[in-house]
Length: 377
Image 1: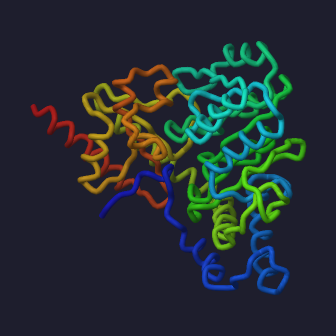
Image 2 (image 1 turned 135 degrees about the horizontal axis):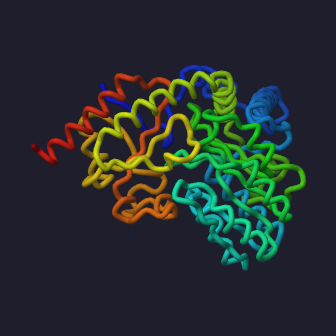
Image 3 (image 1 turned 90 degrees about the vertical axis):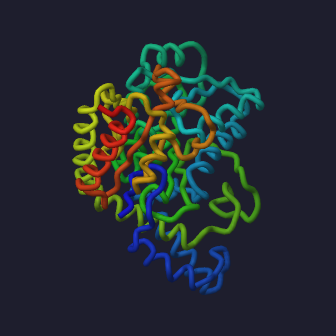
């Protein structure tokens, strides 16, 4: 049977989530902005989902704005903030997702000063350098993700928040990978803006949310229609939003169970990897997501190993799915100080609640077999 170990890229739609979505895929089919009964039914559904997302994050209902996913949420946060503020200085961690990095870099064209925050070899914020950056000149916005999508490294967002707010700046937290794996309320308490995506927590693709506290002013990216309190025009994806809410409720209810299960699998895999001479587990010295292991095997290029495993029926990743196919090594690993050669060798395994210990054994057996094929006795 094929094995799927790429849950940080996307997750399968939970049948329970689909069940909640199905009535809104087939009917009622009203536009949520319509005032007749069909429209009111659709509006009630998305407002009920807004409560579910707010509860998931430990937030007030009014801070939740629907988007098409994390990429839009992060672009909305950065560009919307920049447009409302005018010009200034923004900092982002060197290991951020491309949706944050590229959106931030685009602000240079609007006159913003944009700087990267250095990280340590474990992928954590380099605190002396970060504190020096904050003190060097006024900063308006800082972006630091809660947990890295490649390495699984979890940042100390409470400490980041304390430093950022002491400097008079706002904090954007990309919580897409953290959601459903660690608790979100602590992240939201520390953040001013936070991005989420449904398809990372066994919900549908094409829907996400941006949470923004009341003192953060954002200019709309999408105009027209007046939806979402006038900050995000466009008819809402009712079925997708309903599914997002259901997935969030399930993720919260099953958080401890999922985390314990995937952490055991991660421990099993890492124990097996340590028996392979020269293997590297990235970020091993830091607190990491329970489901994520990024590693390298000597003499293997990551894409080649990925394809070799794929031929055995095992699906893994060589890094961020959003950056695959670029021909470039992981920017995350380069920022952590690894060489291009090592970074090119990276493989990411990300577990889900349905993966098993037997599947991990099969992966380890495949790795050992491929190693023997390359280096026969």
